[in-house]
Image (tube, rainbow, N blue to C red; front, side, top):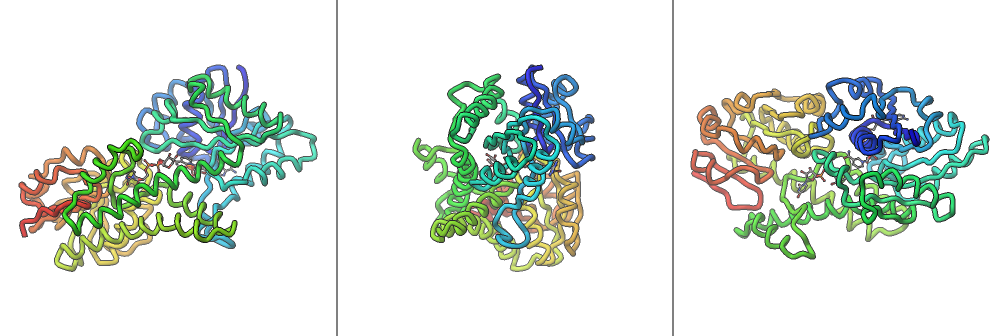
Length: 456
Ligand code: NAD
Ligand code: UDX
């Protein structure tokens, strides 16, 4: 084997990323470690800890050959030349910057583990999303070692999206590698680029200084989320003016300067990254004395909260101003289709708001029911979790589509309608369904940013 790569953190990023590296780089030994023994056991089993299309095949090809999962962080640090750190960096919930700044305690803990156990020079790679200039602090901590070891810090943020992680990793839009500008940093940069050169074309490998790389990750997520908030804000205006958000998005996206992607109106963006990373950007701007810049980006998150609240308000007002004791079938709980992940899913907020209105919820999702139960564990109210969508809709007054699972389109809506209380409503928070078809079956249909189709 050429070299040993270690990844600390076997989560949504560490697992798939390392599986794809191992699959494409048979000359490297790849070890993925985590403090969470249950997670590691799942990575070693037939039931992987995360649902991601295509992941199982990649893991099965490489596991036991040059891909290994372990809880032995210390042995991994001793053995590896190159260490990716892919631990979680959630929003801080305490102390200075609470609610906005990134909590770097897990990151710093790994840095301290590395200096304690390293016996040779290492390249340490920031795979986690981190505030700009984290590498500076990390470099100081690592260089404080008394063993005379050299540590190069590289920023190599991950741009994969859940649900399409394997395709994104296999054919990335770009691989961003940021390094210090001295000779040692540039040598480390080339060592990391060499890994990706096994399958990524040279022109897609973008090299920058380390600060640009760190900041690019935060800003890329902020820009993507900004497009969604922009379109969602216009969906509200469409509902007042009979303009159709689908037509507006499509026609706007035909301008090559705008482009068609990430213009889909929704109940709001979710996922573990967008909100956290924008709030982190907001915090950094405030910290650096740029309140106008901070306020500009914070508005993206505020608009997302507004869209979630607006959706629930619309449900309540359309259902004769009360949902109390009415059963609502929630179709979809994951933050997007093709994942079982519910972190920051708009479905959590929508469900909580509906429960506050004393609605009875029957939640159905093809992959995310277990997490949904945990997310709503502390909520008071009448909630059931149904693996069968038809059971969820039985006796319900409304269906609320909260995740764009394709299979929802193929449901038998005549059967659903027949089993529901009347008048029956559909609130399509993803503009997923064939609205005319379900309207003709008898439903009163409330899409987002489009004309209401009502029999009332
Ligand atoms: P995750 O919570 O799924 O995984 C992180 C893992 O790190 C956990 O399993 C945890 O047990 C482990 N861990 C924490 N501290 C540890 C330590 N000291 N030693 C060993 N293991 C430790 O998080 P994730 O979704 O994989 O995200 C990881 C990072 O990647 C975050 O910074 C995130 O912002 C970024 N990111 C996430 C995505 C995504 O789609 N989820 C995409 C791009 C970037
Ligand atoms: C995002 C970034 O896309 C990815 O590059 C980064 O590495 C991690 O964060 P992810 O959160 O996994 O990825 O999924 P993404 O496809 O970006 O969707 C995020 C949220 O936005 C979802 O809730 C999705 O439903 C919503 N969304 C997306 C919209 O509401 N409209 C759109 O047009 C696109």
